[in-house]
Length: 118
Image (cartoon, rainbow, N blue to C red; front, top):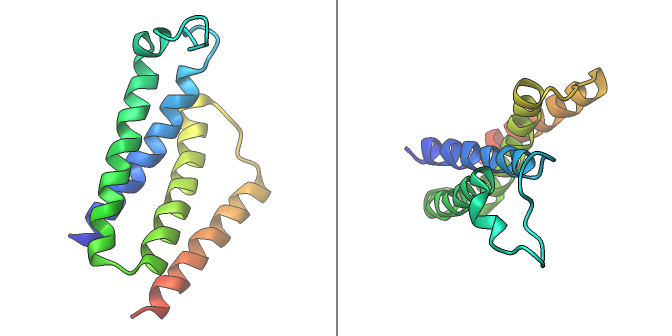
């Protein structure tokens, strides 16, 4: 159950980042000092903010069951990997071989970190 909560936190965090990116695209109303209400008219921005809040709550719950030195690196690296994949699939961004290798190192590092904690 603790790992499920952590995975849901990773998904929430990464989804929030993608939604914020979408919210700041040229065809959306971008909030500014002169138009502060635009924040409430930008659906992806509001959804992204809500998902960041959800990710925080799920992370807090995770900390009750996992040590900080496991939970935080796992959440952070999981979000990095998931954002990278979602940016390719949903936003059409590129993922070059060096980036794939970097993601593999990150994932391998977290596997070593969590294995060492047992």
